[in-house]
Length: 393
Image 1 (spheres, rainbow, N blue to C red):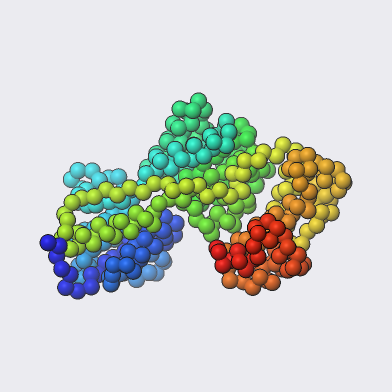
Image 2 (cartoon, rainbow, N blue to C red):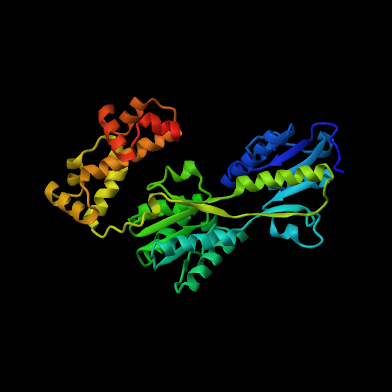
């Protein structure tokens, strides 16, 4: 019979909030506590100056879940002698004889991530591929890139792997950037590129901009983790693979609960993989071949919400309005104004979903003069009003 708890269990949750996967994991932990608590949690987020939990045993710790990402946390956790579930532990901790080798763990199926990325790009008929890993070649990044390349090889394609960094380039992003720019310039185009994680993807996008490489026309970029704040603020917004981290942390909490109640002493290995790709503009598959239209679209993307009009676009690319309109219709099947309005409407949708700003303010911020005009455009496209769209979202 499971042990009956005589008091609220005190549990240490060790998840650095700078990592998107850990933020998702914390949501799963808190969801479990909300449904099955009460539990008393001490959450260690990895902030500078954060209060420590030096002696977990004296604190009354009944269980530990998360990442032991500093030597101090590792020492404190080992001395507590309580049930633990380790999230993405270091490989050496799993070797026979290590004090943590018999603990329950949660691991990422990083191979499945690489395979999903390959399938995503192959479905979009790309024939050139590349991978940019984490700068220190940590195991999950190396395995992710290898799985991506192997899946492509099985389909008859090769993958260009970025590497060869010096110690200084690994430590200094500014120093590495010219190396990355040169490598990107040398890739066959168009190329489908997987970045090991979203923050690395952002660096690739910045390097593309510096090197004069168009995204997604020349480089279609896919990240991993789906960090919304990061992905939505890149130029262009970055597609990314969402991981199943929230669900698995809920299951990990269920297992920790059983361990603390002594309902089981079985070592478990729980695995989380990719859920699906969140597609944004960085991998849009419409290949625009006309360089004049590419330059115009880049200008529109950057400035559509600043009140620009068609003449601003034609002046920027140094072409007559008539010529540019013809090239837009031939290449895209719509007008320059429609291209501007699409960018603005997309931004309206984002602000409706993600903020509580008044609709009048959203309309103004997105470069429109009239709320009624936007309302007409919006209803024509989505068959509902902006207020209805916000409510549904």
